[in-house]
Image 1: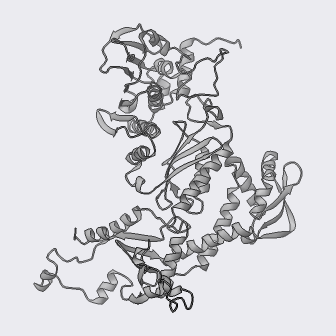
Image 2 (image 1 turned 120 degrees about the horizontal axis):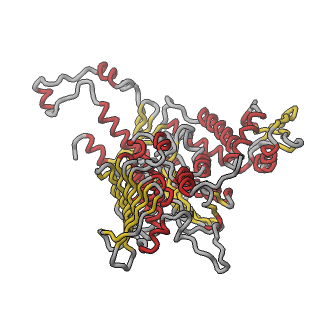
Image 3 (image 1 turned 90 degrees about the vertical axis):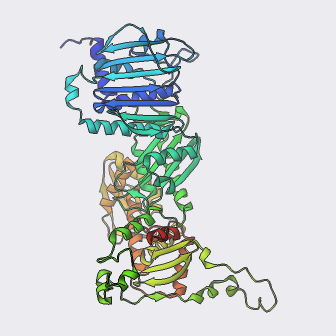
Length: 623
């Protein structure tokens, strides 16, 4: 079969299949061109899911008329410049675009129009491309002082087979919206607007550059609650800087759709992020819950390869272990610094439940006066107990005078008061973050009063987290106890998998698993963590090999140890149904305040709910 040289128009259509997979891909490429041109405002319009029409208008530097024909020529770009030796360095890409494929690829499968007025020029010009046929440059009208307007009509009309694989207009419009949001998250100082089928669906004004403006932009996209429940990140290691925001563990979602990674201002999709988030939040979330996060990595362009895929959605780090370690370390540091803080949405959900639950026979607005007039008959205690199960059960009350035992002078050294030594200032227990315990209800929940509200604590969940953190600290301090196998077990693996496992032998030994090489493609297991009891050593090693291949870290072993510690903590903690006295309740509150991560149990559920007095007053119509 003879070798043939393909015609240029067919080459462009093949390239278009890689660069422009769907309308959202075209929007991505055109927005990146606008941002590279220095735009401070980007307007996007899309009709028919982007298949009928796409318009991208910006106020960037624009394209001079003599360069318009080059702009629609394959592999012609203004973003790469030769060095002193005349070579182009593809390993130091400082712009979002650089391949010179977007405009010619779009023009080869659609009707493309580019109108532009270059900065400093009085006249505007336009060029048309219809299914690869390039027209002449002509004078054109242009509304702004400078910038570009790129219009794409009838996308994929020149490739009907590709058109058949497009999803519904609604699905394509949602993909365009998601793409614009990702670009807006990466560039908070740029304003973005989106019109779908003539209706304004998104308007994001420019924010102040920096962390404050970035958080405002993220809140506008991810929800107003995000700013109240986000932890700020700012860490640097060996020239790689990580900034951004991550949500509290109790502020989570059922999927990973709200996890974003940006590298040098470029939105990317990378398994590195998901693996790092999973590792950092492993102690705080169940497997089916996912944190919210927007992470921004800034590093020397020479340390990351963005020329991996034509769509530029993937990157390859020169040292992925460094980046992963930085992400995990920064997240864990931020989570530890959050202390016992829980998501603000917990209180909102609780108040919402109060409003939705209601009573079986609610009193009218007239209240007590209506009862006197016979309009509402109070129900007997038995009926009330049926509406609220457990209402008639015994509850414990904290004595009002308990505070005396908690004042600093109560614990002073013997004889100090007699010698006239100055006594410590009296501290009001209401000023503690979790307040002063006032009661225990249903022998399960502690009710505490704070200066401006009240706190309800799940005593079992709270103590479970405290015991779990103590066990982790003991493991870190003394290492994991190991149990030797009576007969060492040989685990057969792929040669590459076995090499990865053996290379991490020292790390695994610190976790209680002792392995050594047993020839090519095999690993010998001599000892396992004693916490695991009887365990499938071969299955554990295979899971670790999979984790090392995917994430570069032995998450399987760590998670199994965490699950065992969590189970042991659950059984060793204060059970629901145990009556606590005032001192025990307040001791639990003080320990929660001093223990990191005590705002959520080991599965990401809140350990306490805080209700502000203002919210309670609104609940009862007092505000």
